[in-house]
Length: 360
Ligand SMILES: Nc1ncnc2c1ncn2[C@@H]1O[C@H](COP(=O)(O)OP(=O)(O)O)[C@@H](O)[C@H]1O
Ligand SMILES: [Mg+2]
Image (cartoon, rainbow, N blue to C red):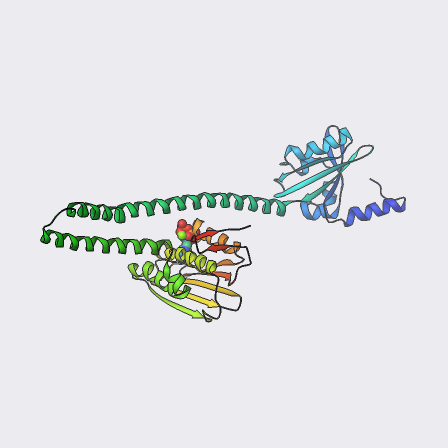
């Protein structure tokens, strides 16, 4: 193609040479698509040398090219209209969009736009959507499991004790034998004490009162005691910033408490640690809770579980984040960061119904 002659053609040549996207010009010769010219961007991106490919057939330069690339060029040349296609290019290991323009009488110019990054972020987005869908299903399942657990706890403990109580009371009805009455009252007192204790455990599991009454620091201490002590793992709570001065919203405390629970269980399940530090750091606007263990650290082959994913998602939803700092053999530190106060309407912890509700 000759660009010289008029100032217009000269401008086109400059455009062809300077544009950042690869452009190739083709013609058909005896049924073969032949390279007429390529611009410097084509040489750079496709890693070819202009002089070595001009005059050569398309498939001699790109022997592995998918049929769609030659088809788009051929159709553009035969139908004399702009054609478009997008797909993976095996030769260049990238994801390309090609727009082919006819240049009468017998040439086609094809501009290649690199869409690899777009494709990658699109794939990442799809992956994330899939994970979120699974997470939603997991949440429903774990809610259902929790309900079943509570129901079976109520049935096995409180329910059983109440039936025993009723049986004794029925037997007492109309009896005048004072010895028997006094023995039965004794038994009833024992049963009632058991009911109260079972009830207290259940309430604690549902919503730890210490969190509401005493705040996050003592609640995390008690949580660590319950989770770590049975496994003979020692722990320290290290705090910075006054809890009263930098008071976090109830919802923030609940989320951090529940997420810390998952991280402590992870330390027990996965790390083989002998010690765990719980570091709570309060600043004027943010709170960080870090759970640091001295265990194995995260292995490269670690599976991507839902525990960490769901912690990350929940914190992101509140404007916070989760960072995992881990070196193999040197333990793991999970740092949760969250704003102390949530924006109005972002997440409401309804104290009256004791339900967490997202409001729009
Ligand atoms: N404290 C830890 N020490 C070592 N490895 C960990 C730790 N916490 C998590 N991991 C690794 O990260 C993976 C993902 O954790 P998580 O998302 O909580 O899923 P799960 O606990 O269900 O496996 C775990 O399977 C484990 O391999
Ligand atoms: Mg886990």
